[in-house]
Image 1: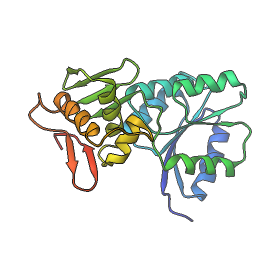
Image 2: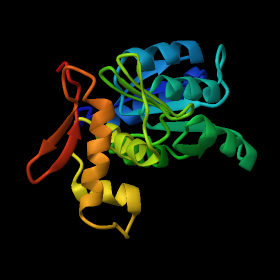
Image 3: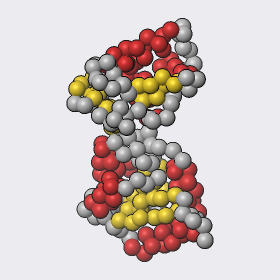
Image 4: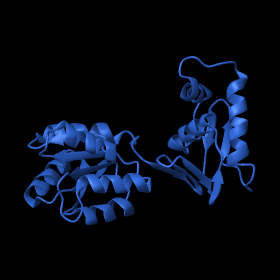
Length: 228
């Protein structure tokens, strides 16, 4: 038997279906925790680290859409695969707005479920609505940035740079990728990024005792928790 190398949370109130899914995933090397209702699913998803969350749309105590929305508001960037018997465009739009990354309509082949899970497990979700690194918080809905409770005044360019760095944190982001985040394939002169990074540091680092933005030789820039 293959050793589990992917850990997921399945939130599904159909006990027979949940058992069948868990058994099949185990054979594919995917470890599966299970919750029968939305409230229990929220608790497990908040307290543990999973590579993928598989949520049924219709759940007791909290439906899958609400559960996904709450996780995104908390800053959870784990990819979400929604299981649903509804195949309407309106339902899918509602799910994607809440932060769902992918849909699978019941009934489905177990092999397709495995394929979707493996595809989602290698990335983080771009649907998260709050980014946090240490005391630095970026709320994407309210467009509010703060560090240790102090509001940061960011220009649109600085916001874009900070969001890019926070999504990658603690890994470095190359100068080329930062330039692309601002200007796509048409960057201006070579000093422009330097100016914007200086302005970003004035907000994120200068008022505080420890810097979070690091310049890494031949790698670019990285944003890391100042207390780690």
